[in-house]
Amino acid sequence: MLLALIWGSSFMLIKVGLTKLSPTQLAAIRISSAGFILLPFLLRRFKTVRPHHLLKLISVGLVGSFIPAILFSVAQTKLPSGVTGVLNTFTPLATLLIGILIFKQALIKQQLIGVLVGLLGTILLITAAGGNQLQFNGYALFVIAATICYGMNLNLIKHRLPDLGALTITGVSLFLVAPPALIYLLVGTPFIEQVSQADPAFYHALGAVLILGTVGTAMALVLFNTVVKLADTTFTSSVTYIIPIVALILGVLDGEPFLVAHGVGLVAILLGVFISNHRKRVS
Image (cartoon, rainbow, N blue to C red):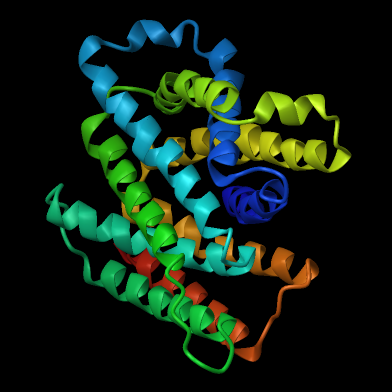
């Protein structure tokens, strides 16, 4: 639930950040702040990282954090925060399919049914968000691509990094991609000039992204990766089913519409969570 609250509010923080920052600036600030905030806790953990871990950890940093951060930021230039939060619910399905197709994970009927039911609720919410007519927004594909990245990353952590702790995986992977992100921010964007202008609105947007990086990325990924190490990847990623509730509520409070179909879709999503997790209670 804590992860759902943190990540559900992330879409609103992205929305605030985009008022004064470009999508790539936002992603660079998010990742660099997350990577460096964890550094004091990693000094002794670097000793557990072996040369054969480095490429995998770089992949985790890129696929699990940096690339999705860019994709979500680009998507929210044209999508409401609540709809983006809803689209994020594709993560469990992506995780399940990648686990089956690439990592030879066993297919469990209850999981598949639960994920599909939740996905139907998500589709209903997306349709309702577009009004009474079906309107395809190509920017939704950026979110779907980000969830596929998350699904690949979850399986990579579970199946390819079983000998490293959650904080080591999260901290080191973020730290490895943080310097390039910071260099790009300072050299490749007008960030320094924006800071020197002392615009209160800019600092408000910057503050939102710093919170997003330190809390919504660094702290949340440590919690999430800890659960990944202890549980099935699809069960773990089901936390994303709760994220749309938080994202939609915050969106409504910020003036985004809420329709009856939104409520129906949310019920379907929660039903999907129950079905996909029910096997844990009967096994």
